[in-house]
Image 1 (cartoon, rainbow, N blue to C red):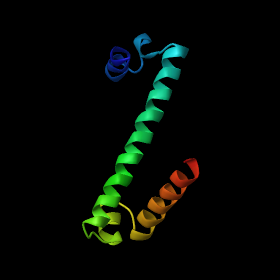
Image 2 (image 1 turned 30 degrees about the vertical axis):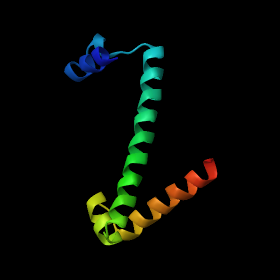
Image 3 (image 1 turned 180 degrees about the vertical axis):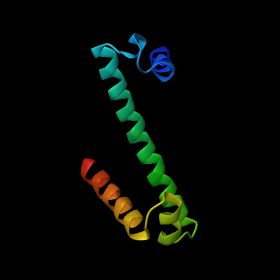
Image 4 (image 1 turned 90 degrees about the vertical axis):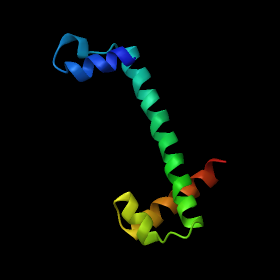
Length: 85
């Protein structure tokens, strides 16, 4: 997979840029795992920031969003986690 991605980065228009169907599906599944794990890490850091005394305004700024959007995203994520347990 690493070689296939490297070839894509070097030559996106050439024949080496094409993945097989199985490779594309494998990469899709892998990217979903990475996104999910990144989400867990992000929410853990939001929780850590709050426990350290950071305001929602500060957290929103660190995430490049508003305090309201940061708060809503965090609470939506925690509610979804509660439903999946």
